[in-house]
Every structure is written in structure tokens, then in C-alpha cells.
Image (cartoon, rainbow, N blue to C red; front, side, top):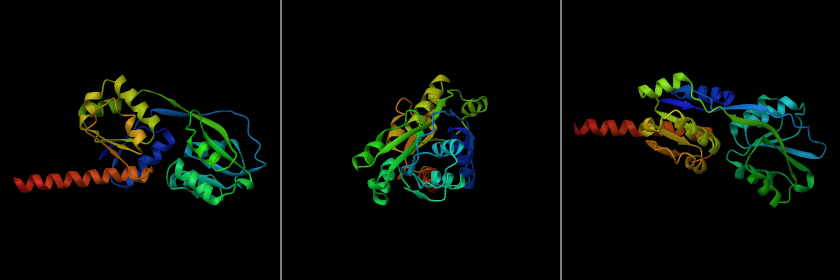
Length: 250
């Protein structure tokens, strides 16, 4: 399948490689740009663990701070791998969403052992902070980056839409879903989406697509990139079965 990937550049390239490994072709068209925020560094003296809900937060932390000895709890396997690649020695993956991360932290750590530091982007969800605070933890926030929408699809993507050669699009957050809808509307591509599959990481990400009629919107069983990409494999199997059935009737 030919799959539109609109993540910011670093994550888009990693996703493209994973799609290629699975036999799909990625059409990379970032609709946001990651910009580092120059906030003052927090005091890490009493921090027992770093919490990361995205690879962007980890990369931004690594660019601003030399500390790699503090245990890091990552929301999923991809962000955990980013942390290991950045030199963190003690990395735990929650293999899920922010609720899974909060549950993992509560299981593995004690509030009495020190504060938590959430490295995140501007305008991030507060759900993680609420959950760990309700469990008695002190959780600080270090906003390290901003995902700035670009809003414009490149010419090669517009040409692909004109030819009807894009089979699917990945929607990996509510924010990326909103950016996608805005870009599609700006380019007047809504009608072209009727034959496209939208693969969403969550119900919230799928809900962000409500203003556009896609051929189908599928939601991953787990909030992970692997689960989203598995939707593509399932769609191929469905189409193959449908084609075989039509051949039998013929």
C-alpha cells in the first residue's frame, strides 16, 4: 500500500523505514515542525525518574541536558528505543499510552523516593500529571519543544491525490489528525479521501477526522505504532479475501 505519513521529519523517516520493512511505500509529507524551546533547566537533584510521552521529548532533553543516569520511563517501545539510542542506561517501556505509563510508574516507583520530571511539548495533555499526582507523586513538567503546524502539503503529494494513488494515511495523535484535516481542506482534497483508509492510533485521533469522509477509519487495538501499522496488513487481507470472493462468483 502507498501510505501518507505526515509526522514531523525525524519520526516520519523512522515510520517510513518501518513501512518499507513491512512491504509498504511511504509518502512522507511532514505537517509539523519540531522546534526546541529554550526553557531554563530544572533542578534534577531530587528527581528519581524522567517520564517521556514521545520520542520528541527524549531527543529534546538529550539536546539540552547531559544527564543519562536518571531512570527513564517511556510511553512505548519506540520512545524507549529512542532513549536507549540517546544513551540512557535505565529505560522502562510502558508499551501503551499515558495511562499505561502512569500505571507503570505507580507499580515501579514510590512517591517517597523523589520527584518525577515529565519532558514534553507545549500544549501537551495533563492526564499523566493528574494520574501520578493522585497516586501521591510530585510531578514537574519541562516543556522542551513545540510541534508547529506547517499546514501545507507538498506538490508531489497533491499530484498523488490527483492520480488517486494514495491508499492510506496514518493518524498518530489527535493533533496530527487536526493538522491533516486542516491541510486537506486547505487544498480542497476532501472528496479525494472517499477511497482512502485512515489508520488511527486511538479513538481521540479518529475523532479529529470527523469533518472529512474517509473510505474507512480503523482504530488500532493498542496505542502503538506497531498496532497502527498492523491495520494496513489487516486491510490488505480483507481486500484479498474480497477479491478472491468476487473471482469465485465470476
